[in-house]
Structures are given as structure tokens and as C-alpha cells.
Length: 116
Image (cartoon, rainbow, N blue to C red):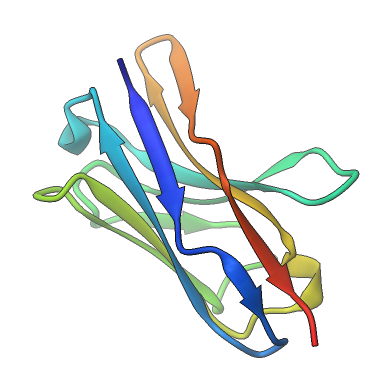
């Protein structure tokens, strides 16, 4: 069974930083691209970032480019999202996600709140 468990969320002031982690199990982690999604209150889910299986190629939504950095540790089965220069509009539940074959998996999410 694929399991994704996010951690690292919290309350941070505008301009601050957080690092999210996602621990994966139940899959051959190093074979799959990993992504972060987010969902703000009252809004639909939106894609944030993806890292390829080897960790050498990353992709970002325009609204986080230059502020967020995705990375992974295939030895530990963990994917990270370093979030800098946080803005109130970054407030959301953040999820890590993986497509394994025809199936899509998402964790339970971790809340990030950016507020003064």
C-alpha cells in the first residue's frame, strides 16, 4: 500500500520560511516523479512543483518560482519542499503526490498558514 505522510507545516509570518517533508512507503520511490500540490480554503487543488525520479529535474508553478525549491532523498524515501519568502496567499494545505502506474496517490496534507 502506497503511503505518503507530510510534515513540517505551521504558522509563519510573511517573508518567513518553512521546509515541508513527505515520507513515502509502499512504492519503489526512486522510480517515480514526486509532486507537491496545495489547496487553499474555498479553492480547488493546484499543482505547485514536481521533481523527477532521479532528482535532477524540477518544475515549478509560476507563482512559486524563485521562492520554493523541491528536492528528494531517494535513500530515505523523502521529498522536500523548501518554501522561502512566504506570502499570505501561500496559505493552504500542502500535499505530496505520486502517480504510480494508473493510480494517483496523495497524502493527508500539512497546513501552512502565512499570517502576521
